[in-house]
Image: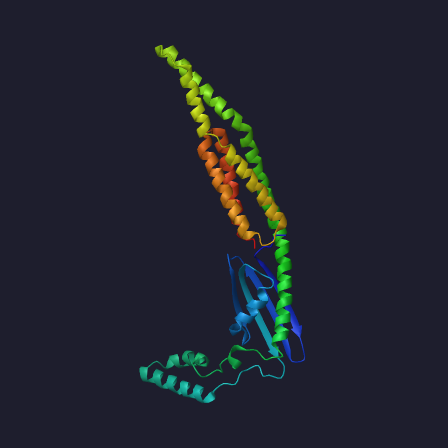
Length: 296
């Protein structure tokens, strides 16, 4: 089953010590990229969170938000009031000296962000031993929900990809029907030109020359191998969609090969009717390229 690379999952857990909530949002990316926000120390604990994420997700950009409410702790962190008071005195003195006392309030409002005022993240970015298992379990559940949404969206993407696959197969069938007529039509055009030349100037054209010209054209315009390979690629494309397992990169490669064969058919066949089919196939392939970017 195909998995979309976009989705959302959330989960909450509560123990006597902590309340944990985790939100996970996923968007497209060729590789796995993780960003973490939320309660300390988890933005600095990204490597451990990524190990959990990799159990569920292989590609995409994931935004993980971890919120932890610890029981028995005050909401406000302990500030270094001595350093804060010193900063405020310096701000007031500098503003009065510069003759801009109106700047004291806005500058003082940002003093909490100055070095040494607020406490640094504790334990070097490591959560308490009894807290991490709760966060890990909550993240696991959120990722399960994320994948359910990704599977649901993946079904819709798969149906649309198969619809475009059917459109290309239909156009290719039209080309296959036209191929026997390409050489016949060219031979008829050559004969018509010969008859015109004979009628207008009395030119005598050797029959062997006509046969040789037609044979050369038939060799140059033969796209039977390209049609066969494109048919094989279409079968492989449909099979990858049915299997689904991490098919995104494989589908991208198959679409690239389908585009190569389609271009060759258009350049070699030299037939207006065939080129109409080729144009429609190219247009559909472009839609496939865009949609498969959203597949894991």
